[in-house]
Image 1 (cartoon, rainbow, N blue to C red):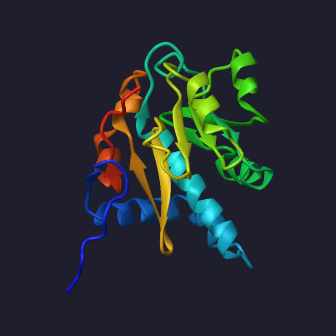
Image 2: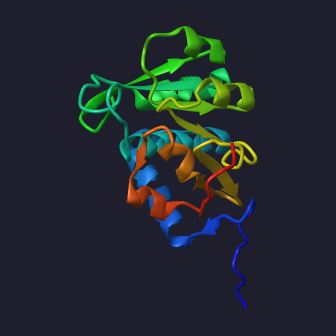
Length: 203
């Protein structure tokens, strides 16, 4: 008898697993030009490529408020606060890509202070294991920056999208309330593909 896989965290809304497989296939197709010709790609490199595919899709299925990410945005900026290897993978895979008709630029940062000092708009921030989540989320409080990570309890702590590995598959969960509070609008298609949706968090 098949048992439903439990969702973890404070009463998330569980969603069908079929949607996650669809998005994973979509990400794989986007990266087909890189992976189909690659030789000797190990499991770690492949997982990095899939993570980049997810990040790219999150960018495409999010709407930013004016000013900064709406019709006035000339480009979309993806900031990466993670290990150098993943930062290089994001730069390589997103080079020359566009989202919603605008070019995508990748910016690697060494710390959250880089974001505080910069006058450039950042639309999506990926937080690696090196990042101080509390400091990062506090610094971005109220700013329309889509926060993404692959960290335990990221959504419960106020992050917006968290990547979750289940066996050999990579899935994601979303905290819609965290995104809505900053004016971001996540596509209903993206929400329907999430592994789980977390309720609004208490500040």
